[in-house]
Every structure is written in structure tokens, then in C-alpha cells.
Amino acid sequence: MSISNDTKKPEIRWIPLESNPDVLTKIIHDHGVSRKWGFVDIFGFDDDALAAIPRPTAAIIFLFPGSPAYDDFREKDEARLALNKQTISENVIHFKQTITNACGMMALLHSLSNNSQINGDGLFKRIFDATREMTYEERGEYLESCSELAKLHHKSACSGQSHTPDIDDSCSNHYVSFVEVDGDIYELDGGRPLPVSHGKCNDFVLDTARIMKKFIERDPNDNKYSAIALAKLED
Image 1 (cartoon, rainbow, N blue to C red):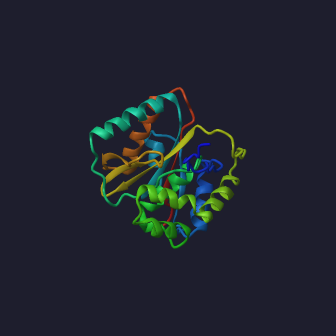
Image 2 (image 1 turned 90 degrees about the vertical axis):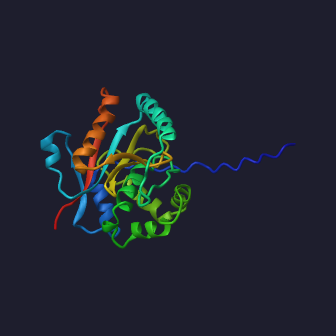
Image 3 (image 1 turned 180 degrees about the vertical axis):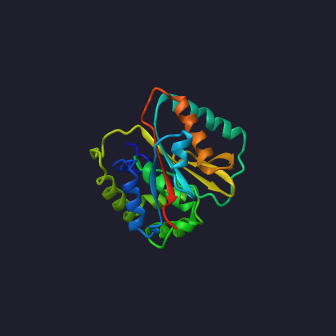
């Protein structure tokens, strides 16, 4: 009789979070972030739509369809980044996603953790303070054990406007967050091993819009794209 040494952890699954600025705004306001900041829809990438986004804008969360076109791009991009080492600011905070369907909350964490001036003094600040000196891998393990975050996610995922999916339903859509750190724009995705640097930032909203347009150009026949901005709503 053989004894297996396989210690693979069981899968942790969450209900997908709706791309809804009201839901995300309530999350951050209920957990210590100033009510001067909140999420707003981005209704398009033309000049008029982008001009309507309040400034300053601290982060943009982008929802896009997972597809063979994106999978092919990502595989090639990972190979590119492996050959061409990026210069990544030591101030960028990147969390590993190990929880299935948690990418919406990961995008929220990335948006807040890389804008320390709006962390507030609640749950998110406690998470960021606890994980500040951790590695990417260690941060993923920490989030797995954070029951307060899991409860918050579940409550929020069940409070959107659309039908709440079953926890076992498959979900192909994916969230990433874009932030500016030390003058560069970073794409933060907990499913990728490193932040992706998109270079110097001249205008965060306009530059990020150009990056998101490239996502759409890779798979233009799909319409499951949306974007929301974390912005200052009042002085």
C-alpha cells in the first residue's frame, strides 16, 4: 500500500463580484475609506466620456472576457516579460489570487493598497498594514485566512443588481486594476506572477484608456467589457 504525499489544498471559491460602482463604493465607505472617494462608471473611451470622470482618479478597474484570444496574448506576454526584465517600483503592492472568482475583490485591494492616502482606518488598512512586508506568495496565503474579508465579499456579491450566481457556476470574465505608482502605470492582476509596467504616465485616465482599448482590440467581437474609476468625488 502506498501513501500519497500530495498535500494540495482544497479549492476556495467565492461568488463573483458584480462590476457595480455602487457596490464597491459601499464596501470602501463601510470599511474606513473617506466618503470623499468613490467609484464611478466609465461610459466609454471617447474624449467626452473620459472627460466626465472626476479627477483626481486614483485607480481604474477593468472587467474583460477571458477568451482564447486573451489566453494566447497572456502566454506570449509572460514569455516576453521573462526575457525582458521590468523595472518595477518597490512601492508597488501586488497580491496573489489563490481564491477562485475573487478577482473583483483583488482589483479592489490593488486599487486601495497602491493609494495609501485613501486607505482610511478600517479593514483595508488593517490588511495592508499586516501584509506590507510580505511577499506576493505570503499575501495570497494571508487573504485565504482572512475570514472578515471573505464575509465582506460574500455579502457584497449578494447585494448587486444582477442575479447572484451560484458559487459553483463557472465565470470567464476577469478583473484587473490599473494604478499609477512613482510616475508609471501598472496593471495589477493577482493571477499573474508580477505587476505589468506600462511605462511613464502623462495623464492617468487617458493613458489607461489606451491600454484598455488594446484589450478590446484583441477580441473585438465580445461586448463583455466594462470599467469603473476610483475617484475623488468631493473636496
